[in-house]
Amino acid sequence: MHGSQPKSRVKASDGAVNANERPAAIAAEFKPAESNLVLDATALMVRPIVRLLIAHGVTLTMWVERLKRVFVDVATNQFTHEGARQSDSRLAVLTGVHRKDIKRLREESEGVRAMREPVTNPGLMLMRWTGDMRFMVRGRSKPLPRRKDLAAGEGPSFEDLVESVSKDIPARAILDEWLRLNIVRMDSAGRAVLNREWIMLGEDHATTLNLMAVHGYDRLSAAVENHLASAHLYPVFSVDSRNIDAKDLEEFQVWYRKACAEFLDQCNARLTALEGRSGTNETAGLRISAGAYLYAEPMHGPAGDLRIK
Image (tube, rainbow, N blue to C red):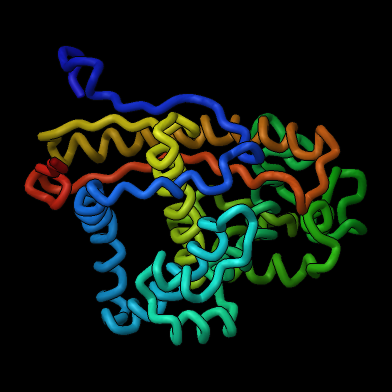
């Protein structure tokens, strides 16, 4: 964006929300007249997903079966009527999924949340390592001795880091996996050193797919919640610029990565300080996600001339 461009090019939604006070079924007010608009908007949003599916050999038939599960799971848990259990007939009306399929899917009890479970504990460990002052020095993640008995007064160990999140996971198992994924490396003193670029460098498809799923889910959920509530419940900021040269994009990316890393370090530190401050039970508290993104495509790309009327 150039300095002469109007400030309206910066799009922002700002506000505050107490997730525990959110209406039970914001989207209960159906608006049939907007169905085509929603279809047009979601058709654009799903294009990157379709590209991913085709690249991995996933056909439409396979995806439709998974979508049925998602429709039933969302309708069951987020479109309840005064707390009553959803009947198969009502779910069929809400989702368009045949009642026989609904019965089968509900019996199988496979929800979309299953994909997020594998990254929960490791994600919290990384958050601690990058935001908890016990595991940092001069604003950076400390190199950590592998075990407590090797720390020798140097401060916390990698074992302490893992146990700060869960005592049920062997620290050695986490360390071996992170070494394999290039999340950490061992220095000459035998300490685990965090590789800050691990997400970009990682080659483990299961891990990167899990992270992509969670990040995409969170980013879209914030926008959808704002739309359904017709209010700015969650801050969603973006800036859009056009006709940028490729070499200028590279320059901007270098600056942007540095700016985001510094900002997210501050967010991590702040959230770590807030964790457990009110004595909230871990299972009753809120999961908070905040992040940043950058994307570029040719001017004639799918979103280049989007107009939803």
